[in-house]
Image (cartoon, rainbow, N blue to C red; front, side, top):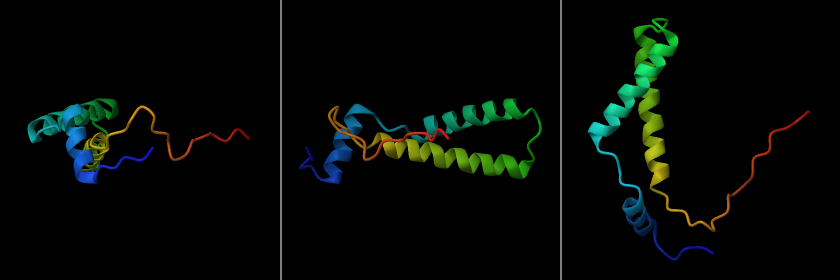
Length: 87
């Protein structure tokens, strides 16, 4: 059943259930993720790769935050179902 609320109302309602991260927490999360990737690649990353990684992590965190702003009801169904091809 579609909702009658506007996107702005849905965003405000979602914020009550999943509070937005502030800049300090986003920076801390990015730092921890960067640390994990650095440990996994143990000195194999150049400075340019580290810069690209930071930009990628920042974009992924922003996307995650945007997805958390969308309020879904327990009865909402996915737009499609993914099935891996088994050939």
